[in-house]
View 1 (spheres, one colour):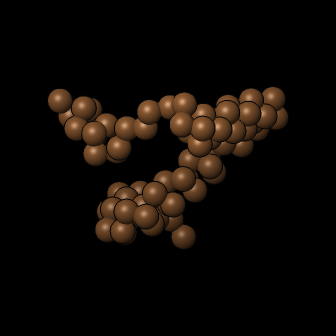
View 2: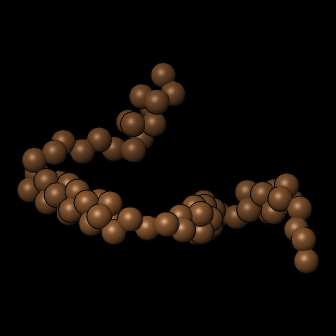
View 3: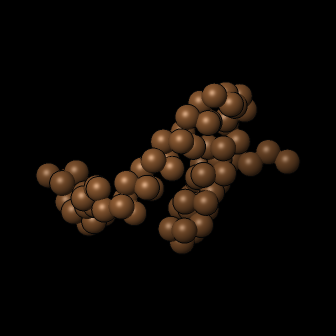
Length: 73
């Protein structure tokens, strides 16, 4: 059964934000068919490093509301 992409998009846009985010993540993941293990390992290490920096208080966090305000300026 073929679905019209425009109809699917319109239906998806009616979902709550959390559901839209989960759907978007699933769609993006479905496009990522080739996984480079070295790249994945590097990202895992980078994410772990950033988490340690945040937890240690080495990074000044900026609230999303401030980031968004700066983006629309």
